[in-house]
Length: 393
Image (tube, rainbow, N blue to C red; front, side):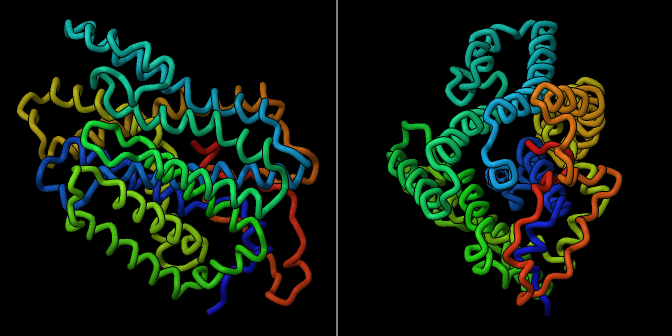
């Protein structure tokens, strides 16, 4: 079966299957939080690690292609786009959470942690008043540091950039003390950097050649089945003596990294993950993730008998959360992304630079006709705007 050439990979303007992965990750996180014991087999807690690997891969790929197309990465543009992508919805949901807590007479805990939530050090907040927001803080700090590390200190050098990424992973692993009383936040950055490392490797022709066999339809199906098996085996992972799950998270991040190249292939797994309803949920996954606790509170307020973790609470929370996420996506996310692009100077793409495919047409761009022996394998196409659905998280 044919595989996807390096030129075809570089010409791709959308990865619609990744929106399907984001949709699944968001929904299984909701199942973990509210589904109760019937859903423990799904290991929904690991959905955030899927988000992390995807973020590292997509953001690094975008920056690598920008550097190659324009000669350098504009940090100003990058930071402006990240600010308008992440903060507006985050602050809206944080304000709504505080307003609801105030109305319920329970705002004291939230006020105690508010400096942490505003400074994006949520994982160190003294209480769990906005419990799931720690993941946003992890990604925020990654966005602040990674471009400086990989695109200012190291420029256009494949081996050096790869070495820096591997050393960063090793340094973070060394920070994990494997003690019960120490927060194991470094492992989450390891997950993101695994995605970054994958992007760096795939961007180089020789690196891409290592993963190219995974892009055949048969290999893609085999990898997808293997990944599902790894995911479903997580509940049977031997428990660590200190109760932490660093090794499990590390193995899972590597499994996700192997899955992503396979999802480039136009096979059955990609077709399923590109299913329009899944893509729709994936496009709203950021808002769904943020609003899930507000959705749960709304469900219980409307139907008190749903209180208590259960399948019906999980399903109702997902439905209400998606309705709220759609409003946030239309009224906050997309308008603010547009503002960020205008302020960053990227409201219009440079001549000859392809733009992202519209959300209504999520199929990937048609691959080029290059073959393995074609000289176009060695050419570099203009910088695509690579997103799984608009400007990615």
